[in-house]
Length: 198
Image 1: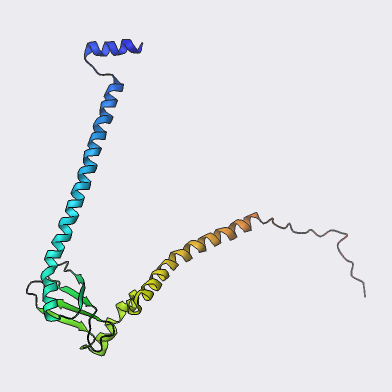
Image 2: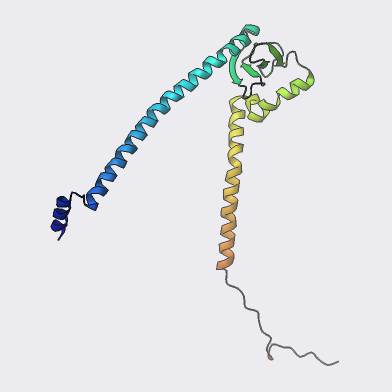
């Protein structure tokens, strides 16, 4: 019967449903393969373009900061998400008298490169020094690698406490359900003690 249907399809010039389904699967597989490999290749190239472009854009800002303060190592730079915002370049390992944090940050105009503000505890006020200590204390950098590890572990403690709390709650709930309920004792005539009549 199946050979007759295939013969009829060959005579009429129509493909069998099974053959059309096989061709459709093959086209989908080929399309997926092209999409996957092309996406991976372009993704790698676009990542390289983005990284190198960012370096080129911020290179001038870092150069201006290093020209103003040669001591220290460029550590981080905060870009300007809006046209009216500024760049912030931070240096670490600042070897200067009174620099306990060994960190300095410069805020500069993104167009002219003019330094608008300097966050340096060696020249800042007491309020500025207090502000500069917030991030090192928050991130643990003020205490070196030990401080960072402690901050990391304390961050993991919150989800661990949540998960263990839920597990403990479920355990108590199961134990409460599996515990047989005590039936209330009914007072019978024999259990009632007669009170002596005075």
